[in-house]
Length: 233
Ligand code: GLP
Image (cartoon, rainbow, N blue to C red):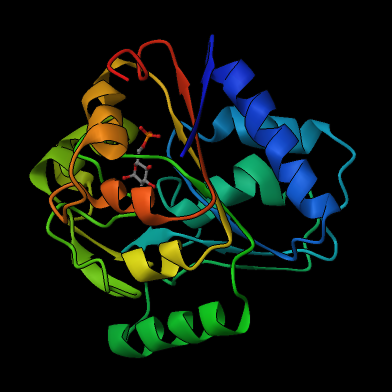
């Protein structure tokens, strides 16, 4: 794993953008995208650049079950606000959180991932080590699935909602095997609340109890951290 320490999220966004640009310039055609507060500075760099993504397809990691694309807390809304309304892509896919048949939606999403193998994947990390919405205990063999959010994740994400009761308890998330299939992975983490998860990811044993620890087995991972998230590594 390559570790890059930066002074703040702005610099992290710039560094991640450099790596992203290099991948696009060397022919990346499908990008895996993440939500949450962490990748925002990266999306700002993309938006303010002149990079051409019209031949690039995106697939997002996850979406809450029960939220429509118009709901401001949905990841579809987030992606539109952070990136899609500014940059034209060839196509963009997210799981549909309102699908009436979840099993069909899951198989549709796995098919999308088969047709569009990810060249470059951006990841954040939960303070419990989750990637996408793959909570501790998720099988390393998992593909897209319906997941129940851990109480700590619901609590952490409540800051985006009016009250904790409004946070959905389920999501559709790409699985660990889908993420590991990406050719190149760049994981971003900022702030003290991520320090332990980053330590476990980089130096801990590879265990399903820390989903991100599987990244130790991926041949092309870069982890970008600020001082606080990287203080234990
Ligand atoms: C959510 C997302 C993850 C993200 C995590 C951390 O749970 N599903 O993809 O990495 O939040 O969010 P933040 O970057 O806001 O700390």
